[in-house]
Image (cartoon, rainbow, N blue to C red; front, side, top):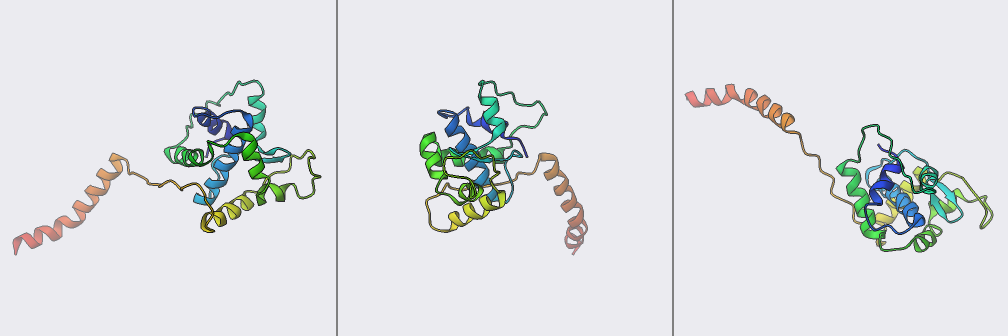
Length: 181
């Protein structure tokens, strides 16, 4: 699992217009990752701010447009990029204000702000379990939603070679016995 700044950096390689759109695309990337895989895309918490979901670490880094990706050696996997790409393909043509309005109608944001006056400041976290449940139900409820990417795992060459050797060894005796008949 990665952090939200790395996801934001990847999104910034696309046509993302403004900080609000970036924040909402982060939220939807996390939400659909939870719905499609059952796992979070990134470790950072999403807060229910008055203008919609926000990842504070990305907001703080973006204040000076100086995103610094920690050099822990971890990059986004192809699986992570496929999720982000699917979310971007669906939501990327919508501006930040449109996406903000959309989030204001969704249960995860509404639930996190339940005790907050309309327009009031809030740093309440948005529950990952609520996001997983809400977006999972949306995906099977007939709503128009992003298309889940196909997740495939390809064995490395050495893994394939080892499996091949095990199978050849396993069947060698049986094949030799049949050849002698």
